[in-house]
Length: 411
Image (cartoon, rainbow, N blue to C red; front, side):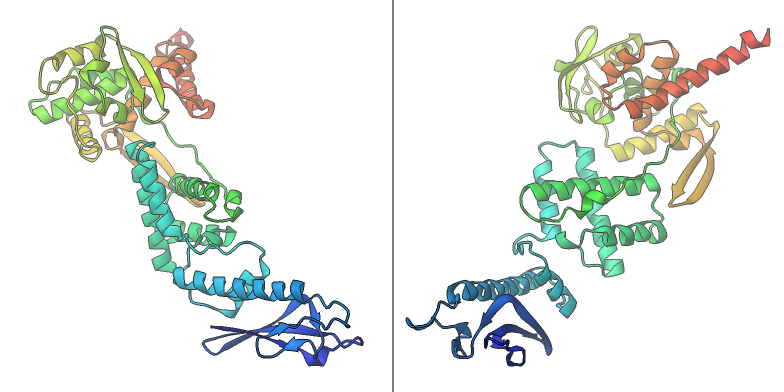
């Protein structure tokens, strides 16, 4: 890559001032660009060093200091653009270089998108829950797959609406990604872009225009009858028995899987559990114990599993489905999902939909149905967002309406 300056003599004005033109050459490509706001006379132009000479004492000032500074800055910017191209493995094009020259933003030489994303993940490990870190890793792998499949060059400066549309097309058409999962990917990308912007890794704010679409989906939970049916079932297989107890403890307390997993005997008191909540960073959060949760804790007291046996989330989700299938929680359940505008309807036995996340939903829904006040339930579970809690309230209201229809309205 070479940058040189010369006078465009065919554009000499009536005062003998000639515009200065830059010539950028690389791999047989030539880019000519007139340097704005710089002119000089043929007499004052130094061909050897391609800069403007100082005038003689008898001559008027010719702004050689100011104009040479503009030429130096242009030269420096072109060199930075090419260093940026090399550092980010970009194939240089005339259009790319002209676009970078037009923009007044500083050329960032040191921050690669993917290297910075790895740094973002590493620095989040001490402040984010394990599940959140996994979602970050999944997102960066998804973006890498996108670049490999589409050849789209993902850099800080290319995260714009064009990226959003191409990424969306890839997610829906190639990966058949459901809308809500695509929304999570975009949310994480926006979180990372904000994190990196705050560290001066880039100056691109186009990502703020990205919209996160979220479809309303069914709340999968165990009814009180199904929960007690599972709780009272005695599995001969001890592995399944322990998984059942772990799951039911979540159903009776509203604790997340990650929080139950970190429980220690020191967190357990006579009538409550006291712990620091990972996701919301709540300190000394208190969860009251009912007779069912107390019975489960008592079962493992003074054993190697105290306070509760633990298992990886992946195996847990497999085993709890097995538990529910054996117990007979197999009501046909309809689920609807969207991939873009494409609707997908599916009917499956309920046990296939039971995961660690449904325990907390089971607690909230049944607590409201049984008459516990909304404020109390939210205080126990630590739900911060009004929108995410409304769906449980609606289910409880629908259940009460149904019970009314099946009792008083039949008289």
